[in-house]
Amino acid sequence: MNRGIVLTLLSLLMGMLVCCEDYKDCNSPVDTSLGIRFYRQTHDTDRDTTLPGLTAYGIGRADSLLAKRLPTSSLFVPLRQDQDTTAFFLGPDSTRRTGDTLTLAYTRTLHFISSGCGFTTYYQLDTVYSTRHFIDSLAVPQKKIVTTHATNVKIYY
Amino acid sequence: MRRMLRYTIKPALLAGVFLGLSLGLSLQAVAQFSGDAKYGFRVGLDLSRIPMHYLNPYRTDLEIQTDVRIDSDLYVALDGGWNRTRLDNKPVFQYNSQGVFLKAGVDYNLMKRKFPAEANLLYVGFRYGVARMQRQIPAYQVSDPYWGSVEGHFSQKTLLPQWAELLVGIKAEVLNNLFVGWSLHTRILITQNLDPQVRPYLIPGFGKATTNAVFDMSYQVSYRIPLWSPRPKKKTPKQAPQNSEESSAQ
Image (cartoon, rainbow over all chains, first blue to last red; front, side, top):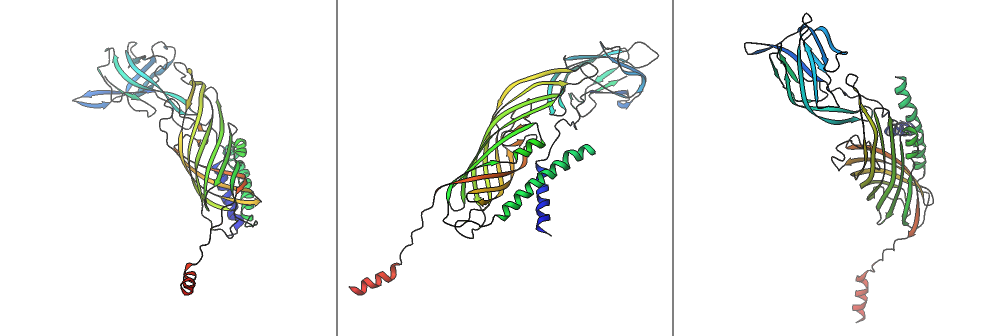
């Protein structure tokens, strides 16, 4: 092969090393919502269940529903980044107006992702409790809330 | 796709043409100068930082490279410079940093000289680098459409990153004592957990610090100040014939 072609190819390759980059691009997940999954316990066995008409909203944000009377088996809800506690209303059945309040206490850590994505907030759950109108019990299989979209809280009806 | 092409092909072509010309110039400068071997102090500028600023306007770099020939093929090298980085990704992230660096090490010439004065080099080298930089995050925002976004800032912090570096390159004497050359570098960051809050985006002298190992290249123009010439090696006289003459005289 002609030496000139080789040199040009080599130069282009080296040119790529110093080539431009867009530091504003965000290609990483940043969402750190709390994962909730609904179960029904029968004979010591967990069974996924779908709530027929779940209504969910953050306490203080009743004007903005996270779930609006929809059949739902799992839900991802955002925790407050400015406080160490967040509470949610969970109404399992659209035919009834009552529901339960799920309260979560946690510690927050600011986590840097990239120049394009900026920061996100990681959470470590400390305490999870609820009223027991419809909810039977709670389990917390994953206390750490990061960008993996894991199930953090199991709710048994 | 069009955006990607704009960001890759055009600057790559520019850099490629720039480097191709320099490479051709370097390879043509073969053994033009004759005379005694020269030892001296060489000082140069890394010109690759100029197109770098054009391709990536968020960064401004200056690098001065020096070396002293201490043996036939061995050079002690000291490089220094400055970097300023400004990232403006409002409202998500703003970042400013500025700092200086120093790299010390050696270069070893691998090319056999065709005559004693030939100063063209094909070399490998090692550097140990340290930088002193200040970084600041004037504003950031963590978006949350449901509960409301959170804003904040980080005040200025001084960091002292250190790294090791391997390099390979060529230097060609294109005019008497004037050299052009290029080199490829690989650097490994030694300092771990440099900043637990925000990893620096760019370290002066090291480059983009989003990973612990980086590749880089440089294109140098340098001038050698010939300070001294090596002492010619004394030829030891052959002893055996003299001894025989002395013994015969006695």
